[in-house]
View 1 (tube, rainbow, N blue to C red):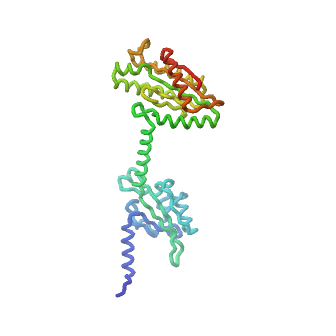
View 2: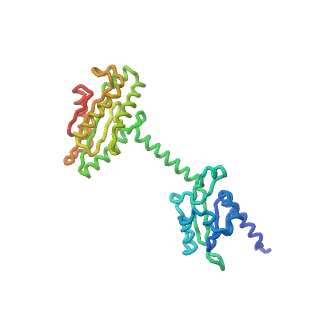
View 3: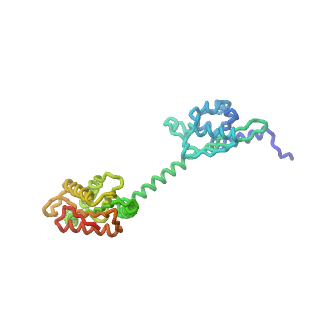
Length: 322
């Protein structure tokens, strides 16, 4: 039995295959005219095959002229050079849409495009353009990036106040300490403690205590203007502020501004002694550029300075060198 299929039957099979594949297929000749436009392209472009075949591709899509797709087709026809266009750099060069509603909104399919030169017997070289819809994959990658950012923020943010947490502080302190030593720069540290916070919690309740922490943290963190400055919740009612490239005098002035801002909030605190509002005490320290110390020594000096401020009556700042 003759196993060869008649030419007409083979053409029917080929047309069926081209209609069934789930990607766009366009073939252009040496003059850039469309000789094949499959059903996928018609479905997502809104352009029927009969209206496109025989027309120049750049007349159908003028916006492609001079772009990466135009250049890649030229390379394929002229130099027999195939191209795979980066989706991140060529997100949606063809005006292709998921449906009529998406087209009305101007929402294009995200596209991965492969351009392949084709040798045609007894004819100049042709070029095959394959277009895949990668919208789902792109959306998935975007979601994963967003989820990663959320997880990262949760990892480095305090769950109650929203400012940096202790882990973030440790990472930032390590980085800034290395940078200060490498650059021969100053590095200052503030340790801030809400005065008589246990008495506040006992008197007003833990819910009010949490609100107090949130309010104080937001107000004080908002005072830091430089991107390199960092305020973190160090633990309980204690906060730490990293101030790169500032000496102890500059850090002391910032500490006094922070202390005054906390008092300006006028949060009632009947158990706070002479001042019936929430106040903070601040310890200040700084390593000199010519005499760097380790991180533990810097934190220890700030803690001792904070103790000095508490011992001197609270609602004040005190400074100690490491």
